[in-house]
Image (spheres, helix red, strand yellow):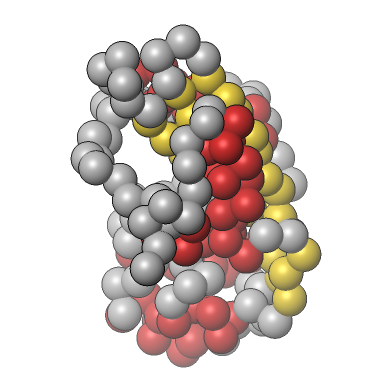
Length: 177
């Protein structure tokens, strides 16, 4: 957000159950969770709220945030040497309207050795990251190719966020030096 001159005045994490529904497709899941977050956010008349969610999808399988190291290891093993989708949905709400967008990017992960996986897991960078990795951290060495939005893979699609803010008549670039 700082890249586009927007400074959050408060961070309020809504309490939303992020459990996928039986048979739910990854893109639908990501949109539903984001909408639930924005719907759960209480705002004053002069406020806006931005919510988002990112998930990693391997085919129809949703790879959310791993609960522990073993699950993160499992995720990395199945992603190793394969292409997968990273889906990020965002929603912006003011006092009378909600704007929504989602971005789907393709990511290729190189073939990972057991030693590479263990070394990465030792960094603890996997914690709280969909699919058990973050492209902006040490796992960047595992990603030789992407197609789509790098910022969306990191978790906040900057161009789409700016477009939603502008649609809501919120000025971008106002906090830049």
